[in-house]
Image 1 (cartoon, rainbow, N blue to C red):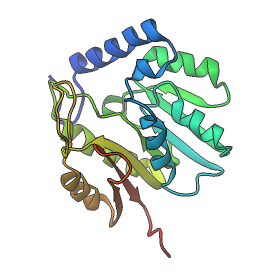
Image 2 (image 1 turned 180 degrees about the horizontal axis):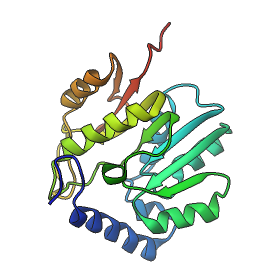
Image 3 (image 1 turned 90 degrees about the vertical axis):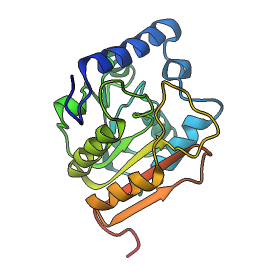
Image 4 (image 1 turned 180 degrees about the vertical axis):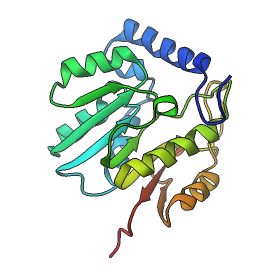
Length: 212
């Protein structure tokens, strides 16, 4: 069994196995990550990048997948020191080969913690899977606390919201109000965006006020 805020070995194995199998089937492809239809991932990346001026900063991308957020920032000609964590070894191996200028590490922050400090920490589509052996809310609260401690400026995190017209059993749907309330327990400077996709929201947690 897992602790209240840590993935169990069984949950981790299920998630890693699912993505490893898709990677064997599809390779470097959006279908491997199951990111959603159309421009959903690009829209989410645009939302995350709105956290602040990213130029010449250090960004830690927790749950980096196949490095698509790094590709997005590079395509926008944003110079950045990029660090990516993921629990899927094949993703990290592929990223190291494709992006030797960036840093990648196999790391489960619920068990291994965060080893780097960064100006900004991003978590994009990391917590969509419903866990069987641990409470999803507890895992996200723990991740947010750890990420906020590691960030010098701010953290962005997106989740599936519970304002939906359907449910899939393998996905978890968060209350935006409840997660906003928890974020406010970490910092007074919190922004919630629920205006860019109908069923997803992003929280921004800052160390200082952004309008000064």
